[in-house]
Length: 167
Image 1 (cartoon, rainbow, N blue to C red):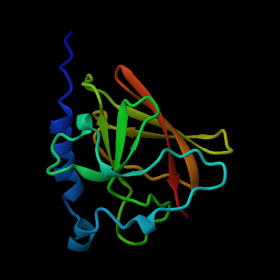
Image 2: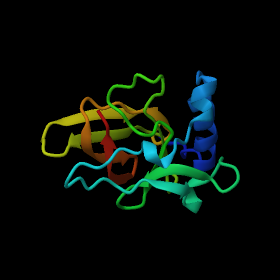
Image 3: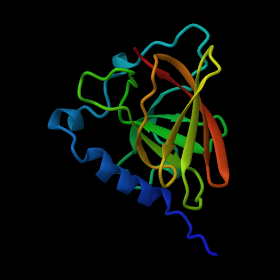
């Protein structure tokens, strides 16, 4: 039985751009990167990963043009980047924007599923989310505001990151 290699990060980004912009309103497309003042403040003791508003790492730039400037968070092991098109991430979106996250893997991987096991800080109850096909475009909604630890697993790889969802 043979398993086909997963497409490159560049192909994933190109596909994600098409998926993420399909159905966007003109207002949503033009405000894909909100101003820094839109960032939610961290809860006391929250160890959320730093949201970088700047150039993506070299390995995550495929399919982006120019300086590949975007809001993103890197996994603690540096194996996955979460490009935040829906920043700030919010539990109850009333503005018509969704919690769009483009997951970009550092290394090629076999076709499979990105499994996200999320736990809100201070609780032990996990919330499971899946991205079919592995890292790529997604909309990740979580049920409550707070700092969430995401344990991320896709074929042959794992990483962890913390993200804040505002109320």
